[in-house]
Image (cartoon, rainbow, N blue to C red; front, side, top):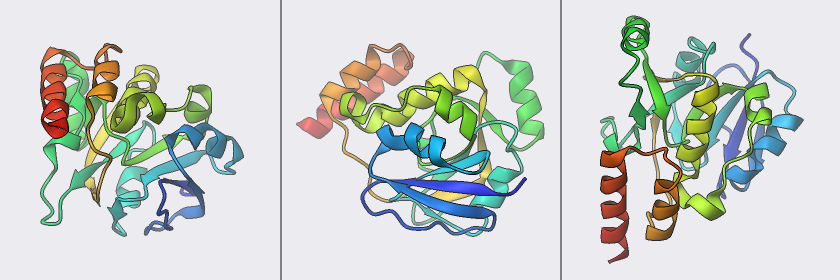
Length: 199
């Protein structure tokens, strides 16, 4: 099935490039994802940050892995991967990693919500992201819950150029640290980044 509803979240939504988009729904923020999912007429949703710039190949590459939540690789203006936005991998699942690599994807524990193809029913079953509580980390907290139900995959062949994202802030970072989503290294790194940004 190639029919997809693109759900573009953020203040400057625009219809994304790519074949297979049946319709485009624009929502102001991540906390409206569940409502948009309930209203969608397709079984697959492409969740896309309004500040992201997909290419014509972004969605088709995700559709090749539509059996699982599939995330695009965020890249900068030079086409280089943006490491802080990649999310984190499931290091403990060696067989799963080897199987995924053979299919040219990598299993994720969580990721920033920038470009993600996912089944509508999975979105409607979860409480939506909470940007008021977690700020820029709301997508990471939500994808951690999503991938706990259905393993998510990073699809390097699906690339999306990123624009400006919400700034890091100590309050949301501290609340995110309390969820247990981040491991020790992630927690220290993100808290340091948030405190440096605040300073």
